[in-house]
Image (tube, rainbow over all chains, first blue to last red; front, side, top):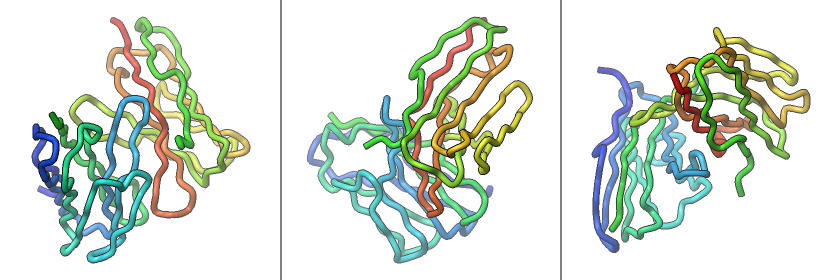
Length: 111
Length: 110
């Protein structure tokens, strides 16, 4: 089915561990985005990508790494997780014209 | 720095009442979007307002963009339990990035 899917939906890990959140879209949208959602902050942009092999920092990029080797995938990696990175993470895609489409989120807890 | 402040942060009212949610900024936006988000899901777009002073209606929901394109409001008439959710405004400044507001969590009590 067409759409945008995130995996895993839930993840618990420990501080210092590496964790990767996956995002896959089937529309071939050029743009993809990663946001984190925390109470009182709405959604804050972590990283975004305008096309394959093109990525750029958003508002809160520290501690995160992204890559985009294929148009349809945009993984987000926390290289050494910290408790402050406990959050709900949303991926979105955009064709440059219609509104952004959001995935259903990944709830990440770092103990 | 949060460019878009929403108020109130939480709102709990009885079914049938009216309510207004505000989205304020000191910055000018080329357009303003309103989203609703259900638990366990991503935000879903409700409306986009583009012109200063523009008013758009979506059934019982009325959206207004400020004349100076720095603020917006969402008014719900005769609220129903199905209106419960997190409402987010998001401003666009002519590039690919959206700036989201702080969110208003609305609960309608039957």
